[in-house]
Length: 168
Image (tube, rainbow, N blue to C red; front, top):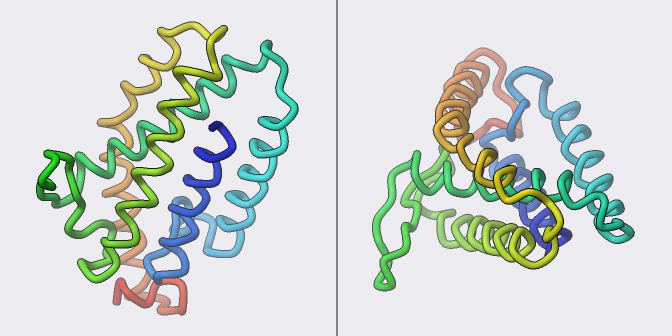
């Protein structure tokens, strides 16, 4: 499940890049270096999760909790409506627009659900307070997402490119 959660986070950030709204850290590093950092980080966690000893549970719990916190921050920090099941459904997020939300929402939900299951089933020797403490990042991540989105829009005005085309 940690691998699925990791793949979900990667799908989330690379979907944003491919859709033309950038990706986390692209406003600071640029699109290619940010993509490289995300790809390397994803690959490292993916590889380690396949061979992890129980002693690595705390690190994987932190990764899973941060991934879950990022999903919760998206679902809390952007315009949304409720589904028939009462779940939040994003109507717009980071400039993606409503036409991409039918694809983006499931990516968020799969990665968040995988992270939650991994926290409950795979990271059993990790202290429970670690995951709860990491989930306290949700308000910080909401603010960070909005700041990054503002910087990406500003950069799109100054230096338009394929990777920020939706933000112009």
